[in-house]
Length: 118
Image (cartoon, rainbow, N blue to C red):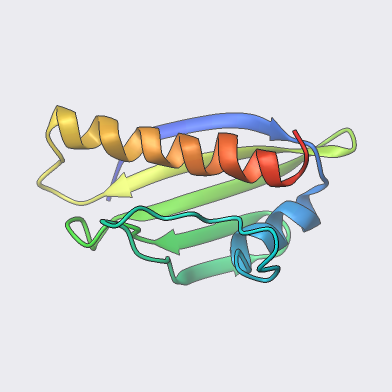
């Protein structure tokens, strides 16, 4: 697997809360945390080491081998959350790669953050 994208950003709650949000995104139907597009599917949890690591299966049927790794580190009262996109050969073309990175950034650094009131 090759790392083709990564971004780190702070999330307001502590790692345990962010871990729960990543491993149980549909826990609270009143506050959905994972709004997928028509060409995406819900991920499976491939690995979870509470509260520091979560690995999702692919969101994209056209890249079923892809994985998304989340590393969570305490940061004061919050969390530094890094997502890393991993794919196998052949690597996605620039257009698809840009789309995948943008979607992860939207899902994690915008929508997830929004569910925490930020």
